[in-house]
Length: 210
Image 1 (cartoon, rainbow, N blue to C red):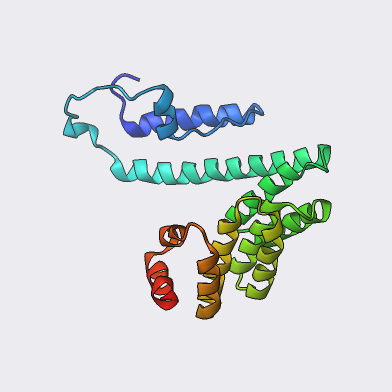
Image 2: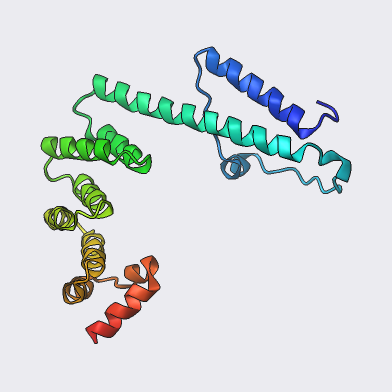
């Protein structure tokens, strides 16, 4: 584009993006950090002329407006992909769990809960479903249900017992049951994973345990 400013470049890129979307293709959004793994940034080091910093407010406005639209389209496209996959392969619990996690991350806890329960109806011993449903209950302050899910997950941990004990420990700690929190803390082989979550909780549990 020669010496065109950033706003002109941005508008041309968005125009091209919209044309591609309207053609029925949903472009994949790639983070710069990931793209740089294959295509390192150039070593251009010449000082940028101050005159090129024009229309900064316009640039920010276009950026935020268009990014919101792109993100929304990406979210819709991902959800449609999950729905289509489950319609075609209704017994595929792997897709169902991915969809549940997507729903959880998107703030749709009701849908995530329904999907996790559906996964467990099909596969009662699914460790990921048991743990993640417990996490969902913990997030929504349904502590007794969260504890029940974590305890059901323990027999199916297969080497991931510390993950379950960590969740139970933190659950009891936040539920103000320090004695029980210490009990689960002491069952952990790698107690430092509590420290990785919260240094203060770790220090309190070590002190209380002593």
